[in-house]
Image (cartoon, rainbow, N blue to C red; front, side, top):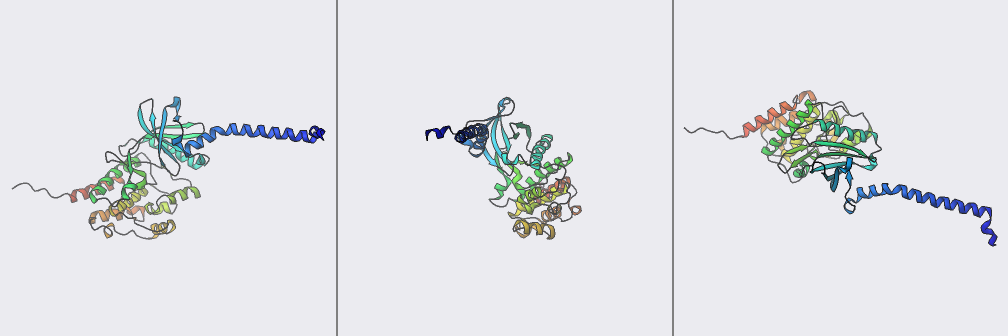
Length: 327
């Protein structure tokens, strides 16, 4: 019986078991970096500070937001000694070619833009299979969070509309169309200025299920009819989105309501109601402008953001009380 352990079959099984255990040990060692990265993504507060970029230029301090494609961290640029926002593309989305392309193009497009109401991009980092965008850190809340407390005053709505129209008009002149303009993509900093983030690319995306589903997961009620229909878009799709946002800011409600499918159908077929129907303080000129901006046909909307700015400035002028000189 003791001789059984020396039997060739037993010896081969022992060798295979040893080889298997060695293989498992190698895989465990190989997976440690991946495991550490996953733990950092899932539980960053329990891990030591991480440095990113050439010579560890950006030191991560804390996570403060997550979106559809990545995580946003507060970080410090040790070379220039300033606070920055560092956005990391989700690990599970790095294999999606269109997502990675948009992430990279977003950095390149934003780096070309320099406007006080557009967040500034500083750097794009590709390191150890990870992708990061270093950008201006904006302390404050987004416009969507502010609107969750209710409608803004007409004066504030028009003032913010002027800021946003100026920023979008500047982007259009450089050949950049936002294509996903929503209150969630507008930050309000501590100086009460709007900062637009998450710019798209100037050309329409290639048609596909993934890109369309991402649009729908955004805010269908703020989409232009041509975008909802999958047609080519130009700067007037941003005019529509800004008009729908002004509607929301002045009334506290969306122009169209329901589930995503129902809202998209309304965007394509139904005329939006007048904002004054929900807020009697909305002046007639503002009603008219918003409905023009949300016209179904792009040709019936204001031609450019410059036209929108002129109309908003005229509304401000009308709202100011007349100043009478002393007799």
